[in-house]
Amino acid sequence: MTEVQATVEKARSAARWWGGLGHRERRTRLLAWKRHLARHIGELAALVAEETGKTQDDAALEVMLAVEHLDWAARNAGKVLGRRRVPSGMLAANHVATLEYLPLGVVGVIGPWNYPVYTPLGSVSYALAAGNAVVFKPSEHTPRTGAWLADAWAAAVPGEPVLQVVLGDGSAGAQLTWSGVDKIAFTGSAATARKVMATCAETLTPLVVEGGGKDAMIVAADADLDAAARAAAFGGFGNAGQTCAGVERVYVERSVYPQFLAKLGALAVGEQTMTTAEQPAIVRAHVEDALSRGGRAVVGEPSSITARTVAPVVLAEVPEDSIAVTEETFGPTLVVNPVDSLAEAITLANASKYGLAASIFSKNAHAAAATARKLRTGAASVNAVLGFAGVPSLPFGGVGDSGFGRIHGADGLREFSRAQAVTRQRFAAPMDLMRLDRDPKVMRRALTLFHLRHGR
Ligand code: NAD
Image (cartoon, rainbow, N blue to C red):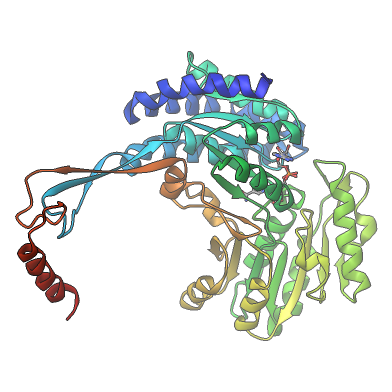
């Protein structure tokens, strides 16, 4: 038996205990874990900063967001998933109908390195709150952060191994996918998601995929350009651009394009360290492709990207078929292109295989809301970037190569549970159609009622 299989076996018995506790008991323990994370935020943030290269403050912000979600999941699981009565309808009026969302059992969580606390906990916290045990495989680039989270669980909730970690690279992730867990929550690139899904297909293991993105920001002519430029800089260059729902493309109405570029250019400063050794080469290839196809660099150049550090690059008038527009760059670069109308911005924003999130800047709330509804994404943020990330009651997830299924919010809790429908017959139906010796007169009467109800 491999280490992964042995861990999943232990999780199976822990899942029986944890699932049997009930929502109130689980909430008490989840909140104990939450308090542990909150009290040790400095220690955890220092570890995240060390493993990822992000600043201690950015790491602390990540932990704060993760803790908000954990708190919400713990406090709302009972309300969202607990047993409740639902209307039984005309045909089954003699039955009481109840709905309950029950735990799946053991959930395998496979995480990325860019937000090694916030991102996996988006699955871990909601899966635990829904009553499952979790086996978590953190990224090979952030193993100590993953192990710290499980140790924190063991310290706050001693006893059964409800949250365990398995360490290793993709092969450990593949083993977890094969292990017979009851669901896999995968966060990472679309390329790896395809491999995970192929394996899940072999064992019919359900899967939620939180993939990458190529998120667009749309800047209307009436937007507060200072606020839009600040948000584009934060969403595009923050965390060295290694944010799944960060900004990668900006579409600006032509009348304010030069002003926006000037404001953004002034904010495009500061060298950062990228987390992995492979990423800078990808970023440089995107910049070089954009320039070779006729785009221009307003700030930075390919040499702004060294072996490990990167300075922001702002690219203007980049052809839409450049890889800097079509592929996830995952670096501190922004493609800023002019558009003639909001309609054109929407068309270009949607012309992507990804569909994670988007942002819109406009002083016209009605136009912004109408634009958001036309975007093929799982989330949108108006007059801010990533506004949805800190709202625990909102679901998060994408479409297309950005994935499927949802974490966070009530949908995120349901993602890690199975709906169970139960009916209890209270009395025999006056017109009982569900019997072999059904009376033809009763059937005729039922058909008359049926026509009256649905055929008019
Ligand atoms: P990745 O796809 O390289 O790896 C993700 C995880 O999968 C790692 O733990 C890795 O070890 C594991 N893995 C690799 N091969 C596997 C296999 N065959 N079977 C099972 N597991 C395997 O992604 P990454 O580079 O770690 O993370 C960056 C990507 O994640 C970006 O595309 C980013 O946009 C995306 N991301 C998405 C979200 C979101 O919530 N949508 C959040 C953060 C990051």
